[in-house]
Amino acid sequence: MPKMIKELLIILIMSGTALALPLQAGERQVEDAEALGEVHFQPACREDSAETFDQGLALKHHMMYQQARSTFRDLAEDDPDCAMAHWGEAATWFQPLWPERPDEAALSAGREAIDRAREAGPGSEREAALIEAVAAFFSPEEKSYGERIRAWAEGMEAAYAEHSQDLDVAALYSLSRLALAMGEESEERHRLHDEAEAILADIWAEEKHHPGAIHYAIHATDVDGRAENALEMMEAYSDIAPSVPHALHMPSHIYVRLGEWDEVIEWNRRSADAAREHSVNGGISFHYIHALDYLVYGYMQQGEVDKAQAVKEEAREVERHQPGFVSAFHAAAIPARIAVEQRDWEAAKAITPREPDYLPWDDSYWSEGLSWYARGLGGVHSGELEVAAEAESQLATLRDEAEAAGEERFATYIEVDRKILAAWLEHEQGQAETAVDLMEAAAELEATVEKDPVTPGALYPPNEALGDLLLAMDRPRQALNAYQASEDIWPGRRNTRAGMEEAQEAFARR
Image (cartoon, rainbow, N blue to C red):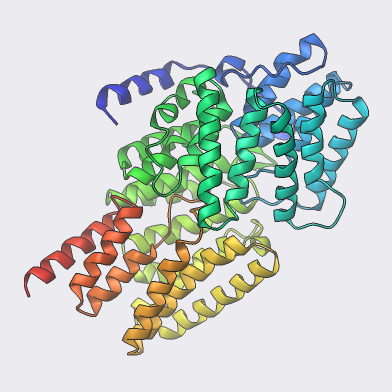
């Protein structure tokens, strides 16, 4: 980022203000509408309800779901005939781009809120369309999470067909396209991202401060080959929401893709500091540990291990993180990332899965898999093959459990890691070609899915691992090709570039 723009953004952030008032159950939220962006939905409710509804919808666009839910609940109590207040509460019980999955209690709460919205009566065809789209997600029929997302997306398609000029309908429709894209094959994925990008750009052209347009556009371009498509929109995000933790975090999705580590560190430090003040369900909001993991990733790419370790301790000192998949993921990822990135195989081998124990590990297959993966890599690289073999077996079990739960994408992430670990095991057992085949298969499998928004990147990207393997087999030219393939996807990774340099030197000596 040019220095002048960067300094301007810092000034904008530092000058932004927002009121923070306590919520129910110890939650905390930004209340100043000017600090959330511009949303003008104009629901068919009491005139004095419109501003509160717009605040709730803006928070939802920022993916501050718990805070949005509290806002909508307060509005529904104050104005129970406002159908969209009930819709808003229901719509926060599922989070389309997050790996969180609503349990039976959440599904029941969403269903009850939608019933209240129907009873209150939508005030327009637009409101009816949005209510029925969310109602489709909360169908009482037995459905998988993916089926519920598709049902909601179909409802949003119908709503958009009739109300495409409404900025919020268009933004939510684009969000539904991105949610669908997460489960699609490559060609269809690109089509859905193309559509979402185009619509979000049109919204932004009309309203520069629309939080949904900017936030969802960053997700639409947090995709291989698209990172530079929405830079101008991204750089405006902190301007419209200088106190919203997730808004302060979002630009780093693109900076990771560009290998701009100073910016990754800068934005996530601000995000974590803002999120530290938000408590949810007796724990610190998962936006806090989400930012910390990205912060660790940035520090490790700059070789600042001591700073990364300090962030790890900062996360550990929190008495309780908000329970959920996201917190479990980052609790596992942070120590694994530090150990694997610095090739500290003893530290990696010593990692204990499922810590801290209050997090929902039974439903967090991929999260737990990160710990086993790091532990297995530590074992195989320190000569304790039985440790690595146990870890590979655990990864296979977690993969199967994810598949059985209908989480094919999470199963794919786990299987990529399992193949990399299996490749190193084969190499240590003298099966060089089998090892290469497995590593190449891991890289091919990774290409079938997009990076999940929860993570800044893999603990050990398969092409980087392939380069390391080929170097160990004294094949520097092939290793260089593998490192270049990794660099093309994840530019600026410290270990990838170190491997490239070593491969170049080895090849030059021949």
